[in-house]
Length: 308
Image 1: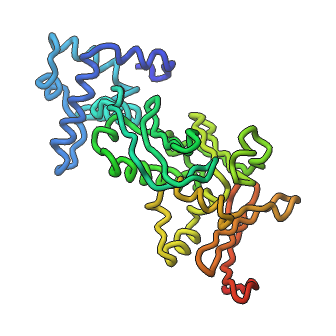
Image 2: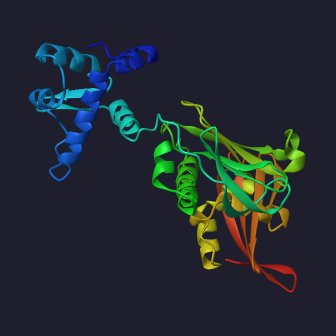
């Protein structure tokens, strides 16, 4: 079987309900055998479980699926990566329209006007945080119908926070959270973009996957906040970065507690300062938003005194 199919050819393979039933059957059999670790399902076992008119027809459908969605072994059939991803999507029913959500009142500050208190809703199947004061969006992120079904109210917000934190950690390593391809990140001057005059961020990051084109842009301060040194620094000051919504960081921009400056141009170097109580953490980043060094600073008598 030729496995070099076009995307259109691959999606046509799924137009037959019998083939989808085969994929669901293999997934359910793997779930039943999860304690034994057996991942393959034999031809005869599939035939017993799938409503198909004859072994020759089942053989035909298995042949169409093999190479793209299934792998054939001596002991039976198991998933390829594409098959694994697809069947989870189908079983979770993530092709359905999610239920309505909100508005849910949540903590956070509007990135644009600085007003506290945001409303979370679903808009065009995206998790959206909107400011009730200026009615502008403060943050949005993708959610799945299964996620909406499994969580409601504050639990949904917590689920989005966890997903976002995990995605940002992968992006810091240059890995796309969607396709695991390569993510490239660069720093740009946020004041030079059309919305720059409404956002209190001097510099921001632009991260883009070269394979699936996933894109995310964040204030440089927010991107630096997920560095391990920052996570530890804030934890010692009673803040769980990984368990806090990124939109809850916006007020640090408005009150000047988090700042970002360009300190060199050949090559470009940026300094992010994250202040907390009487201490602050300085992170120095290159043009790719990679942290090159850090400094801990204590404020004493209004003079910086470095502690290493």
